[in-house]
Structures are given as C-alpha cells and as structure tokens.
Image (tube, rainbow, N blue to C red; front, side):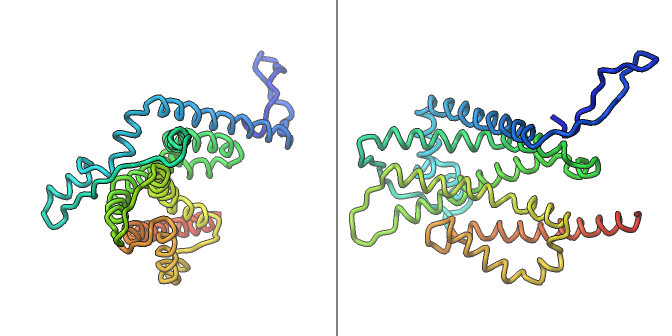
Length: 281
C-alpha cells in the first residue's frame, strides 16, 4: 500500500477521475501495514517449515547427514581432482541423550530450513513495505535488489553447506584427545546451522556497503585506509562463526575478504554517481 493515497471518487467534465487531496497514512496505518507484512513472512516460514517437517527422511538422511557421509558431493569432487585433496570424514553415529531430543531437533531443523527457503519471499515483503516511501530515482537505483540480496544469501548458505561444513565436520569429528567421543544430534544440527545461515547473512555485505555509500556514511578511500583493520575484524568474525580451527576460519575469511574488495568497488561507483548527480544539479 503506498504511503500517499489519492481519492479518485470525484469525476471531472469528461467523466475522468480527478485527483483530490492526498491522504497520508497515519502512524497506526503504517503499523497495520507492517503487521500484515510480518504475518505473511511468518506464514511463509511456517508453511515451508511444515513441508520440510513432513520430508523427514530426506532432511535427516540426505540433507543433514550429507556433510558427515563419504558420498557427499564435496568429498567426491575433491577426490576426483587429486589424491592430495582427497579426504572423507571419520564414521560416527548421531545419538540422542534426552527423551524429547529427536522431536525438538526435528522442529528446530524444520524451522531453520523454512527460514532459509522463505528468505527471498521475506525480503520481498520487506521491500514492498519500504518501496512506497522511496523517490522514483531511489526505486530505480534499487531495482533488482530483492533478487540480488536473495542470490547473495543463497550463495552464502550453499558455500557454508558445501565448503565450510564438510571441512569443519571432518576436523571436529576426527580430532582425537584419547577419549571416546559421541556426537549428539542437537550439537551436530547446531553446528550445521552455524555454518550456513550466518554465512548467508554475511554475504549481504556488498548490499550493506551500497546503501551506506549511497547516503555518504562510507567511502572507498575510507575502506581502503582501514583495510588492515577490516582483515582483523573478518578473521575475528570468522572465528565466532566457525569452530576454533585455522582452516575453517580461513575458508570463511577468504570469501569475506573478496566481498570486502567488491564492496570497495561498489562504494567507489556510488561516489562517482553521487558526484555526477551533484554536478547535474
């Protein structure tokens, strides 16, 4: 619903609608509009969550069990490239230690999968709420934003699932301190979630820089000046997302560094665009 509504009930001499006074939406109207966007977003998570909940065998035996299985595409691809990169995770079984643990994990996995699948729709709902308040030039500049944000998020999730998760699972499951280790299904699912959804969110960095550069809060020169500081922050962020092993941290850190460099290019282009618009004015 647009922010300004036009009353076209009155007709002119040619029986054509004649715009009258513009009616601005009140604060409560905005809240009501926001409420329905949130309701539809939550409903999409709920619907996709139910679908994944009903597909229990595929979710647990294929999707979740993938990174701990030798047939996982990442292991097969690396072994097909060269023997030096070939590795597979140690065999281990997932156990439950509580009476309702299996059911709770099933609900949790269904929720996060529903959230991941419905992310493009959720962002589209957010965009529909924000779009009416933008000027025409801002709408034009943000064209394709829903697609780009959704694509970056899904790329990040896939990167976490197919690259980070296999390496991390193999390292953590094979780490031996002379004690018999058992892996609970709750711990395993929590780690897989940590390897995927946060990585997808972090891959939105270029979009964040785009908007910050657009309003003049960051510049390419600023980002280049503090590149070394950014590298440290990237490694710290990677350490929070991943378990404490250097290989997995670099698997997260390297693409984040490339995203940072891409963000510098985006900021530079936005500065040039703002300068051109100022000259035209």
